[in-house]
Length: 170
Length: 332
Picture 1 (tube, one colour):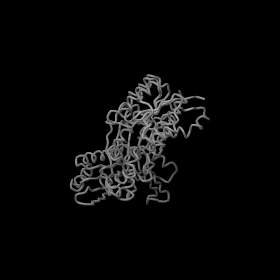
Picture 2 (cartoon, chains in turn brown, yellow):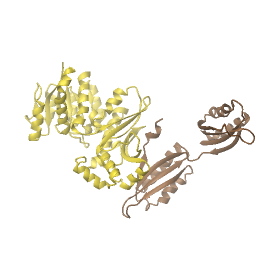
Picture 3 (cartoon, chains in turn blue, purple):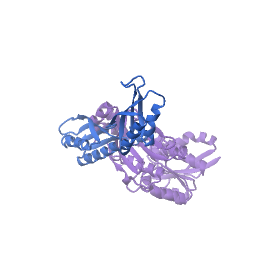
Picture 4 (cartoon, chains in turn yellow, green):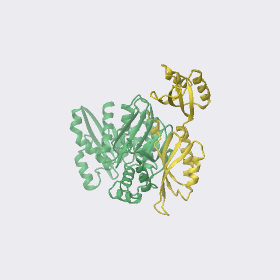
């Protein structure tokens, strides 16, 4: 899961390392650190915003370790829907119940259709739709594409997907 | 001076391109110590044989004037088996039903101790591993650069230049006809049928466009790539294929509005073999237009390497064939 954490650090040297060490010890993958050095909380501490990926099971352990080392954890939030993908569908999209198609993604709990553009040139002609799907992570994004692929096949829609190897390039 | 004797089996656009490129490069190659001599040419109507080397200019002229090269009655198989020579250039038309006559020609060549250079996809899309084994068993070289991507040196790049890398996957556009159709549809907002007719009038699409637009030609090339690079023994029937016939101009417009283009992408890697239209970011190296082909190779050491160029054409395809002939001339 992707976690966004607001921490409050004492204004003495070495505090940031103190906050980051337990995250890497618990195999977290730090994505961003915002160190608001010019800001102060009413209690005189410095706010830091850290976003990282970590296994859900060790999150409580992490908070525990942070608190023990004197870092105050002010807020913990799950960053939802970080990964996005664009897809095109072609066929009788409306007649094959577009609401049901979207529901199949939205009902997963880990992915949502966040954008939809539809072009319908004529009643008898095939429609085209551009969809953007957001998901909690890359793995979930792949799963939602698997679901959409099955729905498209069942409803005889052509699904145009993004490049697969593209995301595997570092 | 090393004299290399070869026969050209099949004297259509590609075969004539090979003859023209040999005429064009004869002197330059002699300076490099290689004397290429074409000792046999066969087309569907007959053949010409000359153990000392055929006058290629007059053979090309005769083909142009009479529609055939025939001077003698020997068959292609006779030429392959009977004439003393080093290389058979097999450039008969592709047949994906049973690979013939290319398959028999290539087998006969290996059995007679000749190296083979080919642009013919059929036999390789059906029996790649058998042919490779047959060449190896006889201690011969089998080169097929021209089968995939026309002038683009894909196999050379992967097997020679990227030696040592592990290939993770390959993506590419390996069919110029469909790329032309998709590019024109997107640029002019025209329906598929309209652009297909235009492509047929320009000679870019065949009268029967099925092989191209249904993705079969792309699938054949993908299988040859996968077999050669990943050591698979797949046939084109193992490829999951979706063509471009259902794509609407509206879909291309929606893609364009969001900075994407739609391309018929061949994909191999992780055991996956697919040909299907994909969304490609407009600035992505695979987003080449017109009739261009492109291949993007993902490797562990070198990262992504992408090459693009002309995927068809008589002299362009001959470029790949000539390169294979010279590889054999230098390495045998």
